[in-house]
Structure formats: C-alpha cells, structure tokens
Length: 184
Image (tube, rainbow, N blue to C red; front, side, top):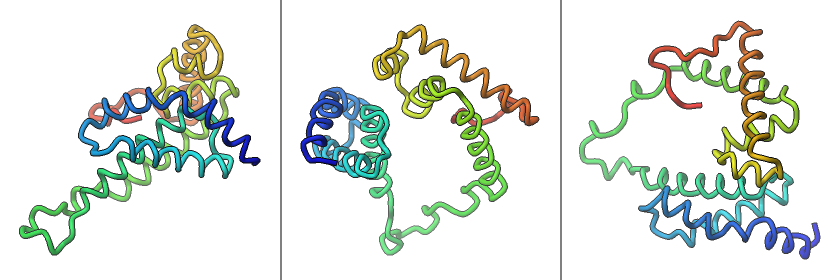
C-alpha cells in the first residue's frame, strides 16, 4: 500500500481517536506507568495489522489493541522468577487451573458461538461483533457503521435471537446454568 495512503488512513481513521483512547486507558488502567508508551505500542500493532489486512474497524481495533497491550504489560509484570520466591507455597498450584474437560468444553462453546455469528447476515454480524467483542456502545456502533441507534438495537436483538435459535437447533440450551460464569 502506498505510503501516502497509509498516512491518509492514519490521519483520518486512527489519530482522531487518540484523546478518547488516552481517556479510556487512564480510566481502565489508572496504575499503568506510561500511557504514552501504550498509545505508541498500540499504533505500532495497528499499523502492522493493517499491513496484513486484518483491520476492519480502525477505532475498535485500536481500543482492543491498546487494552491487550496493557494486559500484556500487567501479565509480564506478574511473572515471577522461581529463584526470587522464598515461599514455594505462594506459587499457584495445578489444581487452580481448569481441568482438560472444562477447557475442551469452553473451546467447543466458543467454536459454536463463532459458527452462529458467522451464519448471521453481514450487518447483523457487524453490529453483534462491535458490541460483544469490542464492547462499543450503541451510539459508537451507530457512528462506526453510519446507521441509526434504533437500527443497532434492532440488529442486536435479531442477532441474539438468531444465535439462540442456532444453539437450540443443535440441542444446546441458551439458559444460564446456576453457578455459570458471567463471561461471554
């Protein structure tokens, strides 16, 4: 892609969101040591992803990338060298991890959800993805897709209903199980 096209894209599609990105990062990660570094890392990841053609919605991708970069930082900070641990009982033990059956079950559920969303009409899939995966508000989705907020709400309802039907056709209950995790 020509350099001038990349510059135009960055100036029009990415940079206008910098102030809201900084506000978001300060609100969600108040203990992050340097928001400037995080913003720059997010830009670098976004540009690399665009070069591979994986960026559909610049703003959503940017915010998700920034969140993931911050989480990566905190994960790296949690890594503890075994030599520096005086009390081995402080280390997590294997029983704290989910068992293999639970992991396989979770992977199967995610694969089925992915298939259900993949069967949705294009607009409905876009709206559902922006809402559930990128956690955009109805207003942000409407602005991103250039549709009304009413259409966003209607498409979300339609998508959720069709996903529930997809699961029911395959014998999977969409009702929450008692004690089930509240993660999507």
